[in-house]
Amino acid sequence: MKPVSCRSAGPRLSGTEMLDTRFAGKALKVTVSKKPEVLADGKAIPQGDEVLVTTLENPFQVIGHLTNLLGRAGDGASLVVLCSSEKIYQAALRFLGLTAAAAGSLSP
Image (cartoon, rainbow, N blue to C red; front, side, top):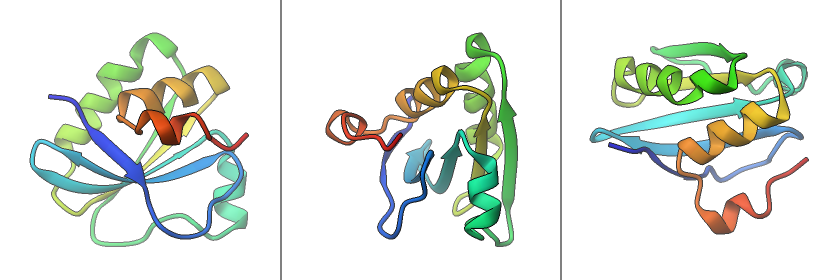
């Protein structure tokens, strides 16, 4: 089972994508960032009943780590994925199923 995502409506922060993601029948809000300082400065860190935060540092563990995170999250949860490099950021967005048209216009 693969996640499918599209960009959330609203302002975008540099180095960060905010996604509406469907996985295993669940609707999730996923924030993927390669610039966590921008999230803090922009006060864009999600709040709610269930917010899960993870850091991705190994490009070979992106799929397994994200699959586990998505599986643990409840319907309606907010997930924050902090990526330690551009390569990991792009891999995370690909795995999350950001549509090809949107992926072609990712912000720097």
